[in-house]
Length: 258
Length: 310
Image (cartoon, rainbow over all chains, first blue to last red; front, side, top):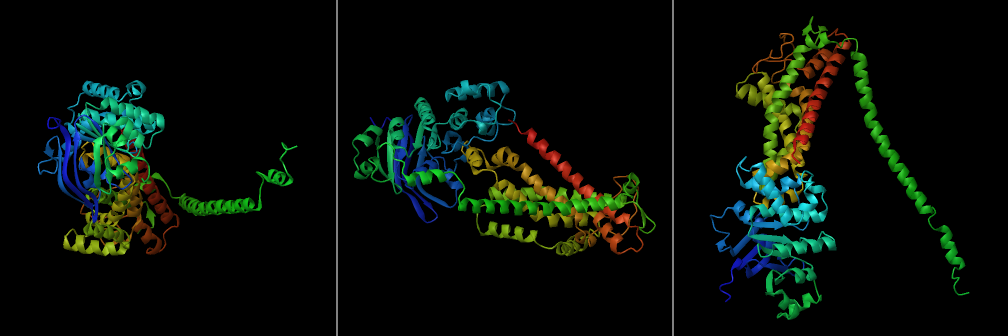
């Protein structure tokens, strides 16, 4: 049975060093297609590092050495023939602080497409349609349809974060990585973004790093607990929270450290 | 009654609440002084500026006219106008900027956006900072050796402009890097993560958001290039050269030229019997030229900002 289940992301013996510091140790993990998988663990355990490996954006931050294998949709992303722009097109990322570009809402949504298409290839009608579709998908269309020309950095934080998600959709990504996407938002906005994530699950594989245990529980199908760069436990969210196998997982979930 | 719990001590506190204490008075005094000192320094900076400009205009008033600007010096520099010098300065500044600005901006983009942080980059950065501090007379000697003699340009507008370009380049690089660095890293991350290449990131987001800062840095170098005497004295500026009055194409690239800064220097110190208003008039025109270039740059800045699409 489990062989038939398709994995979007598979890593094998993944090790990563920032200069001399080893941030990931022998990480072997399979993330299922179309589910929301949350990465939890105390600060500095390597959650964000692992997340950033999945679209190789880690390489932009200082001296990073990586060994091992990461397969995304069955393709090793460290292969020589992998083009980083194409990889990042398929594996989008949402950040802790919403980072809309300082251009209009409209331009934010089509920004990715413009980057990946030749000049003038994108007709006005087509981009209009794409903007409407993407904004509808993240439930912003009704709020913003009259404000498409406003500068995106002036929106409310919740809208900004949803826009950052909408920005990825026109590129038809397979995987969306989210690095604590709600930590800058208030509780209502958090709920709204979580609802959005639930509605995107199925169409996209979502991996979310979160500090918020309750959020992991509410939103994710599967849960990975990390500690000091190693995977401690990976199971269905319910199982992890109700009957954790590893005593360290239990201690963390019950709030004995973190 | 047990309900009335206000004792004498409580009342003492209540009476004092929200009123000034000795500490507050001291803080207010310090605040007053700080404000005063900063204001004074601001005035100290502005007053001489106004005095200098006012004095210049006052002294130059009798000679300033359309004719003064558009005629060549006459009677051994003791009469006439400053046309040849004004046009020379414009040539030198414009050509040096046309050379230095693109090179400087592109080098800064490389250093800030592409270069990895290694020993080579650090050496380049160190060199840039140090070059910015080299006295202009040293640049003049370099220009004399490299452009006039070695490259065989002779003493010419081209050699002088190149020397000025070399002089302004490090400062343009430094200020452009500063402007690029002020663009939030989050914008770049956002671009990378939709698969933008570095160049797309730079062109689409980084440059549009730093263009004001970059232009400001370049503008400041205009004044410097226009005002320097030493670098051009050795490499292309001459004491006297008559050119066709009113023709803006009167100089060729390999001609020698007059320049306002040097003209000012010669008529104030080298030539006896120059009427007092003449050097002051020259100074006013030099000032006006710099202000004009700055104004153009400011208009350009506003235009570029309004062209950003949102």
